[in-house]
Length: 424
Image: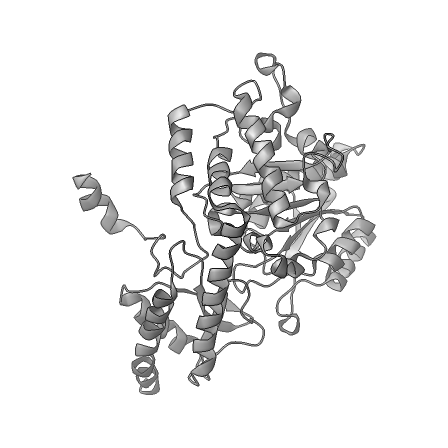
């Protein structure tokens, strides 16, 4: 441990610090840590039901619990309202990037059913120019050569609109291509914008396009009924994912994915050689993911849900939303700053910039802030506008940490502005 403290800790970025406001959060909690310790101690290999029945069955249970906690439509749960097994259900992936990929593979399998293999080259995937880079990577892995990163507009606060998708799909159909997959986002990385799920879902259903909703960061807020308007139209989606390891007190890695119909997912990923054929193969989660091996991730989710419960998790998110409002108020009350109209605060993210100053001044301010070592934020750039990002969500962050961060930020403004004014 002496060597850990001497050689490792000085080189870490402390994501669990209450002064960490960069990227999006990466939560940790004592119950989740206990679940991780037990997972490591049990050291089970959970690719099939027979490999560890408890691991498979607990995952099914906690994914239904979690789906109900978020208010997801019944179609995403493993059982119908009457209690019988349903076509859909949930599965734990490692990251949202994996969820995006496996759903693209499922969409490809559905689209290619009954078609010649040569039609693979005609498949078209869609997303917005604000979507996560994992969508592009998924097309690279899946061998999809046509990806439309559809243009978003400042007037729409950078949200993808149904009319834009409709126009792109019609054009591709006219060219003899096959639209098959759309990745819509709730809470984009740059500005936490929300795509028009209902409109996009309606267009996609008209053309048999698989709709995957990536809510990696913002999905946790659906534990609050007051936040569910951001997810309007999710019932039109074929799949939905979010990361409990981002903002729901569950240690990395844990990405929750639900599908309305697991059939295409299994068609794309199921492979059961003779040595894996056994009782319970129909329940094997190996057929819902790329790798064969599986960690017992459901254990930590179980611990978190049982420890905090619905009210505890709701209070946790509400606390962060209040702190976000507090920081927003600080920015709005300081005439030196502005919140760009096209990037209003959403969820736990506030984007802001020096009023009337360009990229150089804001970049210099960011560097000065982070150089103190007292707080950590990052920037983004959308539509030519350079902005600083302040992302709430650390497990133990309190009001005093937000206030301290604001003091650091404002303490550097005058010096940076004067330096920029004196540049040749």
